[in-house]
Length: 492
Image (cartoon, rainbow, N blue to C red; front, side, top):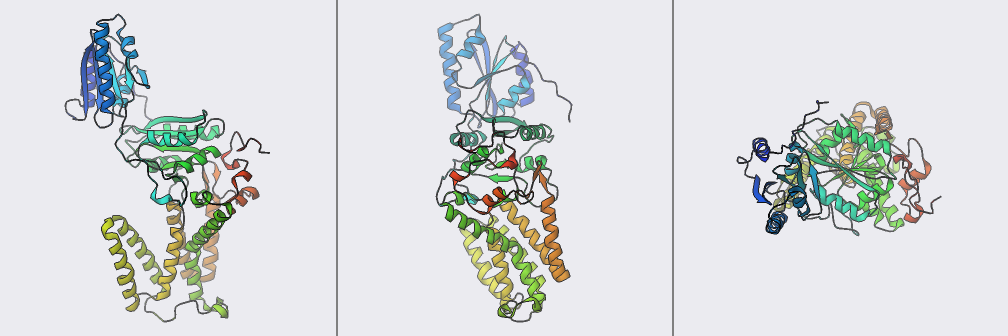
């Protein structure tokens, strides 16, 4: 860890404070950082601000209140208290060093220094530029709320607080990044969440030593879970306040990062990444049906192509009634290479769609599907069955609620395809076994990744496989080690 940096105390002579702040904050050089000087009750006061991060209307009202106060009092022996009492705002705090003033001002608050006082006031008048809450593109539902998190951390915590109006909900805020000083918030229910997990997250955040986290939550995740080269997601992201509120009530700990519309949910297992809000916005029977359809799509995205390649290379494995599976004509390029080229082509098209302007994306899709796909088949580059099964696997990937998990599944699919192409049936069996053993060996924040399958918990696994009615779900999942196990007051 870096040695503790000595803080610069506020001097009673305001001119000394002004010189330090002017030098360190670049006042006069940076157009967006400034100071407004006033003389109130025969004392010079200085108001420091950062244009664009604070609400000018609030600042004008505060300055007007101070000027009106000057006419009323003229002079006072206790100017500091008089000025504090006339800062007409609900969030006014006292600071004793210039470093904290700079951090707060550059976060969108204003700092008020008073000549003759070794303390200053900080007023929260933040008004970050950003968009209004709207439904997330990756977590849309047919029924349900249409609001979603934005890049404003204050707005995001308010969206959660609106759904969990419990006095025991805690929002602890810290700053991460020696230069960026990005706000990071830890959210949890004090009487439910595991204290050891909360302390672990606090410790990990406090030990982050980096200039800044412009990539926000993803950088925090890499410091928090030490993922390395493991492709499977170890934390869950959500942009829906209702999903976040459900996990808070279950005993999870959430992490908000300013400038990011995604919230990190910890701890999570593999099966947390296969849930979707739509399942809980429909009746239990429809929710269970949708869940099984989604599971089927995910299984197809991983195993359909390797199994088809296995049957193509080993036609004797096919029963006579389905021996039509496989290419109906010979090709000059091996089937394995065709599959690999098609898989890479789909990824290229996906990236092209992201970078293509919306007005042209439809035309780009038509060109890819009609011209490139059909002509590639006609000239013999691909056989039609390859396109069919690669497309089905891609559709299965898109049915996966978690984008990170869908990419990890794609990497597993390519690994199994390679094992089948090299070793046939033994390669497929050994590959599947290795993937399963790898998943069962993962532990994330002391949480087994395949719970409730390994270690086996039949009740929890039943709730994973079947969408259970809310009145029947009376206890919190044991994997989060909640202090209060009951979700309903009459739970046994």
